[in-house]
Amino acid sequence: MDHSLSPLPPLDTLRAFEAAARAGSFSAAADALNLTHGAISRQVARLEHWLGQRLFEREARGVSLTPEGERLFESTTEAFALIAETSDRWSEPRGGAVVRLNSLPSICGLWLMPRLARLEAGDPPARISFRIDQRQVDLGEATDLALRCGRAGVPGRVSVQLFEEWCYPVASPALARTLGSGQAGRILTAPLIHDSCASTWRAWFGSHGLDYRPRPQDRRFEDYSLVLDAAAHGLGVALARPPLAQALIDSGRVVVVDPHTALNPFSYWLDRAPGDVRPAAAAVARRIGEEAGVAPAAMERFLRS
Image (cartoon, rainbow, N blue to C red; front, side, top):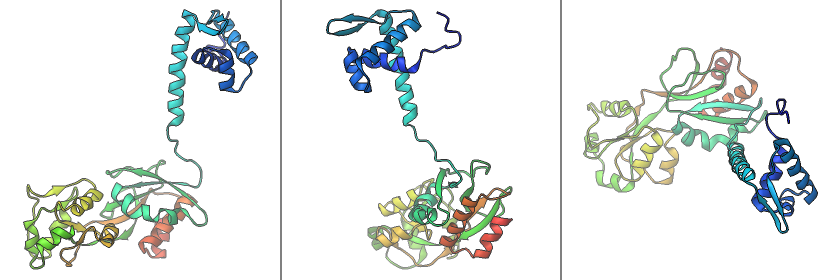
């Protein structure tokens, strides 16, 4: 038989064959696939004709595989398993209402997620698809908006400042009681916790006339969410970065060690690539601006620059 125009046997025949081989019975395969016994028999016969090989030995109480059938059953079982695995994988939502937002994990978890329902609601409604990355990625067709912590003036981006951070030390209630109140230098008796950059701690101690450099007993975590978790578990003193840390403070898991604040050298920005902004992305950007307290005029400049 010439199969040059059809390199693969019909899928429905393979499905019927695999079900019959697995069950050892055409009747059981028919029940599994919601077909008739005759339909399974015809599909198997069609496959055998296509292959030019006998796949089953018909017996009084069912069927058994021939050696050729055994080899085909092994191959089809593996192939169907691969197809099932692929179909179970997550498929990203698509469409004009989907807004692709790049964000640091900490901003996403501590600031965006509590506001997600409001950011997606409204007219028009939107669906935010997150791209989570610690790095500053290039903005292109795969990203509508990016939320980052840093400085202004990133080349190739249009940016609007969302908010600044006035930071202050926090710790677990037990560690805070141990440290008590007094001069800022007392905090150096405990391990300090910071993220990938220690500049905020340097700014806070610098506002007290003290110099800080990371020490062996201090701890560093790449993501700010882990910084807060470490502080809540009594591993040291961290700097609260409002509004990211506010929920943890409100819960009482960490408390204020010193009310003195210092401005974080970095602030939070909403970025986009130059050019036109899709309507759904513009709507989400405006809602992010409202949540952050950005003046409407500043947001419109951001969207039209």
